[in-house]
Length: 168
Length: 176
Image 1: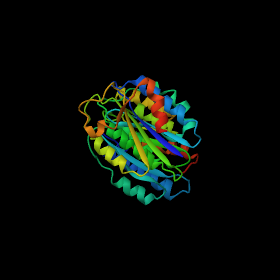
Image 2: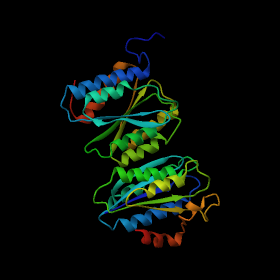
Image 3: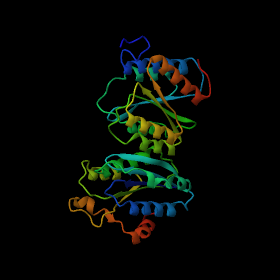
C-alpha cells in the first residue's frame, strides 16, 4: 500500500494553477492504484489539514471544491506543512503501508521563520518515509541553503507527469 | 445591571466548567450511553487536553485544569486539533465548540470547518453572550459547512439546556 500526503502552499505567492494541476496529476496517477491513500495539507503561515489519508479513489469529489478554499495567510511556512504531513502519515499509519511519501510544493517567495532544514532532518529520521520538494517559482531562491536547494525541483507544466511517474 | 444566579457567573470560564462538569458526570457516570468525550482548549493556539474517553474521572480532572491559558482566539485551530483527536475514532463524530468570540488568530474557523466536513465531523457552536457580527458570519458559514447548529446562551441554565439538547441529538438518547 502507498500513502501519499500532498502539502501544498496555498497563498497569494504560490502559482495556484500549477499547484492544482500538480494535485490533479498526482490524483490521476495514484487513483488507479486500489491500495493507495491520499491526504492533503494546505498551508500558509500555518498548516491546514484538508483531507486525512483516505482511499485515493474517493478523493475525487472532495477535490472539486478546492478552488473555492480561501488563500491562507502569508508568509508561508513549508516546515510546518512538512511536520503536519508527517503527523498525518504517522497518526494514520497502517502496518500494510509499504511506502509513505510527502510531496511538498512551495513558492519560497520569502524567508520562512521555521527551519525547513530541521524539518527535513526530522523527515529523514522517519522509517520508510520519502519526501520530495517542488517549487512553483521559476528558479530556486538564492537565500535557500545549499542543503535544501539541492533537494528542490522546479515544477514546470510540461514535466509534471514525468516527475510524478518517477516518484510514484 | 445586577447579575442573577443563572448568569454566566462568576465568569464565563467557570460557568462553562461547572456546566460541562455536571453533564460529564450525568452522561458518563450515570448512564451506559455509548459515548466518549474528548476535550480541546484554544486561545491563540489550541491543544488537546483529553483523548476521547468514557472515564468520567479523567474528564473531570481535565476540566478542573481549565484556566485562562493565553491571549487571542484561534477557533479554527481548535477545530483542527479536535478533528485530529477524532481521527482514529469510529462512529458518529461531533465537535461542540463553546466560545465568546473575538476570533483573531490562526486558521479561520470557516476554512478549518472544511477539514471537519471532509472528516465527517459535525460542528455545533455555542456562543456565550453577544458575539461580534464578523465572528457570527464566520460561525454561520462553519456550521453550514458541517451541517451543525449555532446557539447563543446568556445564562448557565441556557448553556445546560443547549448542551443537553446537542448531546441528546448526537447520542439519540435522553439521559436526564
